[in-house]
Image 1 (cartoon, rainbow, N blue to C red):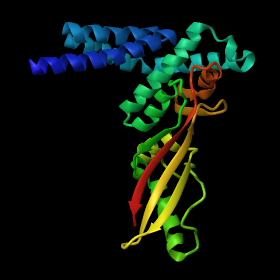
Image 2 (image 1 turned 120 degrees about the vertical axis):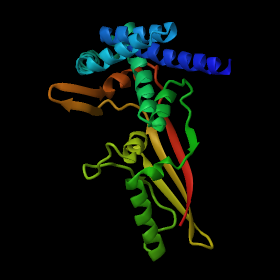
Image 3 (image 1 turned 30 degrees about the vertical axis):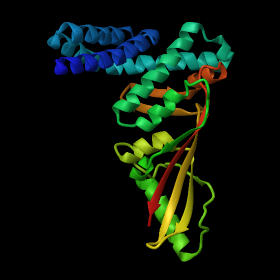
Image 4 (image 1 turned 90 degrees about the vertical axis):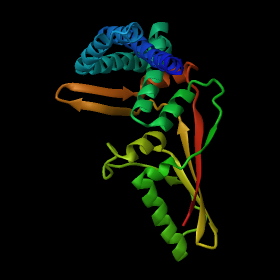
Length: 262
């Protein structure tokens, strides 16, 4: 009984995610992918394991075409926004962008980048209030660890104040953020600022660390995900900025706090 109960809970959870993806695909004119996701949902509940696995395989095989279609749709929507403004978007187009925001967040959870996913979903909160998180996830980034280590060395040498000014967080070409923990951290806090405050302790120093990031979509930012041998997928933030202008998304500041002993 308990196993069946948890199986139903898991099926309901997966089905909800698949329905969001399928709805997004239909709105973005990737109708075949929407059909495959819908079929997977049906077959999960009807017990057709081979059928939903086949649908999943077909969905994966059509990904190159799906990526190009999504990118073309972004081109089209971006063209409307840049030439006519956010108000020119039809209601279905606005809904498609809104669902796209949710789908991107779900993909973030899937690639184990929960912080940027949380930030993305919280843009939908009408309050737009600042958020404070107690989390040291940023320490998994070699880049941020090096910044703190270098600044700590200066504090020990007496060449830097015990309370830092804002340290900009940027990941340049010299850092291979893809496939590393830096990727997860950079997605969430790149463009933000790191603040360090040192207090003397018996062992050395206690460091109060804070990262502040302005969570919003930027009209001029484009994030290329795939661009290889005719297959392209990218995120044009201009289309999401349009929903900010229309009051569908609500920018805010996120603050991440943690402490270190050095």
